[in-house]
Length: 559
Image 1 (cartoon, rainbow, N blue to C red):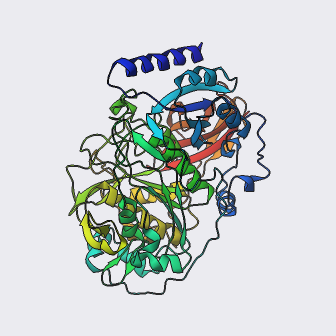
Image 2: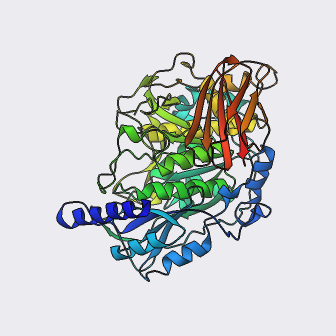
């Protein structure tokens, strides 16, 4: 019955396209019902995770589960076999989705009739050229060789970019010897076309810290809204705010880190499929073992595909496939920084995700009017933190001359430039405090905000002080990771949660897709018994609010 209802909705949408202004869909997100008969195994994770990613899972006790399995390749083959015109566009192992180009709408009912297909959603109106992409991206990226060079500069001459780092006392963290050495930052963005050839990035290339570039974009012929608008350097400008190392001109927030670039954004159009590309990119970042992800992209509306309408009600961390992927990414041992958006009203996707740092923008510590604000639709504080977003110095092209020689140092504005400041300093902080989990690092950053005890919808928890975050938690024992005791695990019906040091105030439980499935308040007790008998079998993440204002996380398996 569900498949039939969804099919009727699709056909109704196609009819509107024929007689109205909506573009005719050509791209569909296929939701698969299971991963049965998968060729992948928990006992052989190197088939789908790099050794670096596996080592991180081991270090932080993050389970490798069926959620990490790529989608069943036999399911992909059976779907693509339905029509020779069909082509793969994106995959999400966490969401168990397969996004395809299918210009013949009569094939959609055949997809729905496959026994392993749960539902289908139209997500774009693209028209592709003969080849899919210039350089096809592997679903399971090859593990990369990782280089950890020594950053020898003790005193840094920041040049005009000093203020954007000093606002967070990041220069003091650098002075302690933490410049991002050994950390891998993945940048999900657009416009990395010339990054290997730009002279001021040559040090990254020569040191072996340029770890590749993945393009997830199809080879577009045209869009219903017009031709693709070239955006050659957005990602490059964002990266330079972190990676630059030109003394006296620009020192970035993480000048000694390694970098990988993931292109997920189709410039010149806004359609839901870009969230599929983003989710795919998040999984690539996880699979190669990235420590930090910065994404200065936001999805607030889809004017070029009005069949899918979103508004404030969808900013709940759950509705969006990109937001759900961002939540899972943050729970897989990655510090995730995303820009809040520049609409001046509510934040977009994936900034509304759980367990990420949504970054707003200020000018001389005053919130910018364009900086999108919270709270989320379900009432959570957003943005998490704010950074300079009015005059962020970076390397950017001088239009219309799109050539590496035309790059020059200039200030840019927006939350797109605020987010990499926080991302780079997060890499340095985590380098300094390697025993903490990604969730704990993000929480420590929130706690260092100047408004942590009195957050508001514009600033969130405020301007974080990274040096105070470091000095307050390194070498002392008054910050203890809040690890709850839970038993039994795996559990069948009743889960006991114990925290002997302080009382528990509330508990929320999320499934593997990041969806809130259970929530309860507690009358200030150090122990809680939660009835989970009604939950489906699988992996779950829990968050407990303690009476010392800290958040404790836990994981359990329901069987």
